[in-house]
View 1 (cartoon, rainbow, N blue to C red):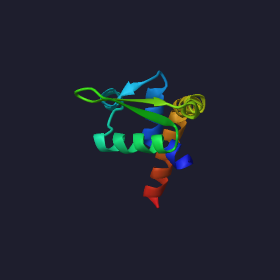
View 2 (view 1 turned 90 degrees about the vertical axis):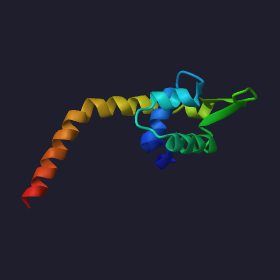
View 3 (view 1 turned 180 degrees about the vertical axis):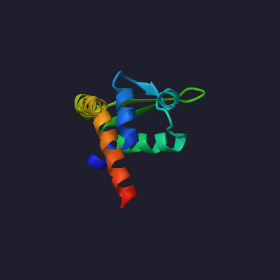
View 4 (view 1 turned 30 degrees about the horizontal axis):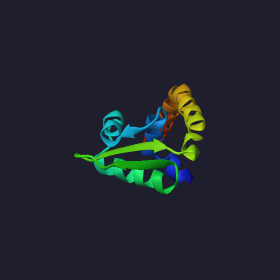
Length: 107
């Protein structure tokens, strides 16, 4: 489970779904850098794990919406806390990475 919720795309999609139902095309537009294939795979994994649901409407053209399940919604608070931590500590982490890389280059 940690691999699933800890990957780059899952957390971004969960964040996008926190406000309610979203169409595939809307998710694709709002998650920068995600390919159609990766969005499809990530949504399938979230659905398989019981974190999101997929609803298909019999319309022309077909409409598909995704939303978080009750279990998926329990991830919103911890995911938000993790994002806040990452933003708050990004300068320190970036500095540590630069020091590490510089030391490695000297060796």
